[in-house]
Amino acid sequence: MLEHGGRLRRAAHDFGIPVEPWLDLSTGISPHSWAVERAFDIPPQSWSRLPEDEDGLAEAAQDHYGAAALPVAGSQAAIQALPGLRAPCRVAVLAPTYAEHEQAWRRAGHALATVTIEQLETGIDCVDVLVVVNPNNPDGRHIAPSRLRDWHARLSARGGWLIVDEAFVDATPELSIAGPQLPDGLIVLRSLGKFFGLAGARVGFVLAAPALRVVLAEALGPWTLSGPSRVLASAALRDRQWRRAQRQRLAWDSARLRDLLGNYGLVAAGGTALFQWVPTGDADAIALALARSGILVRRFSGLGLRFGLPGLDDDWRRLGLALAGLRRSAA
Image (cartoon, rainbow, N blue to C red; front, side, top):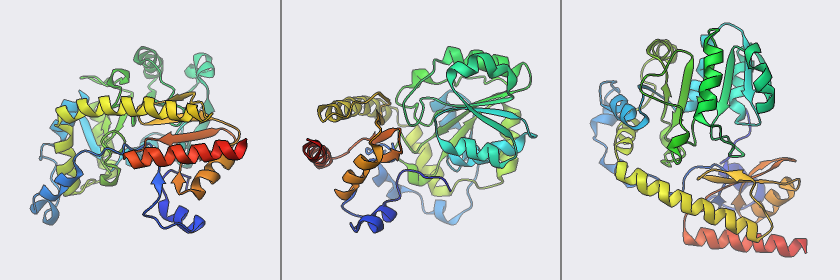
């Protein structure tokens, strides 16, 4: 299994620090979750009855995303299922990026290559499937929708697919390629985990043409989401006022994090509203020093560090103190 953010219990074991005091900045999940306390208002029948598709979730998702959506158990479920819907073919993943895409296609027996944008410009006509994360994880790179549409046109003309993972796009919806009528060969993945801060609910969506959604739904089988998760997701997706406030708050916090890191010599070279990317050859040493202070960040050995957003004022102060300690020890 690939390395991911989180894993606080493992960190607690490795460093001898109980789980509760840890400050987890390793996931890119918003620290400002959508009204989690409303989970206590979930109707009792949602727990006792099998989930039903005709409960309004698909309509709430279509209203929010602007495209017909298939609910899935987090976008991870789609990442693992989609490779099984094609015969072995040539797949390119725009890298570096979320490693689960590469692993899923490779495991399914496809010929896979990781490529740069420059390589794509000349090589896209040599692949059948292209996978892009936009905005990208972990470095925040983003690609204009117009460029993505051009890539899709070249792929779909030969029966190919463009898969765009938009797990981090909710804070910047202008980057989304989703639209009312998604053409064949364009598949968009969305998630409630990051922007809404509801990763534990395990809710994602696949936006695609009707035929692909039908085939994928059959592959995944019935009841992919629990009843309580469906209720929670429907309410969150319909809360437009909260979404507007969340975008403003995340933009402010992301800029604050970039400035804080820069004040202590960690210069961010990219990021999104939910995280900052700091390229550094000292990623291992910095991550280790922060972990000894009970702060978990996402480490990419030899490449850099991804810092998620602190939530509470005490969390911001704690991160600042830890960064100050790093600078003193390096002096």
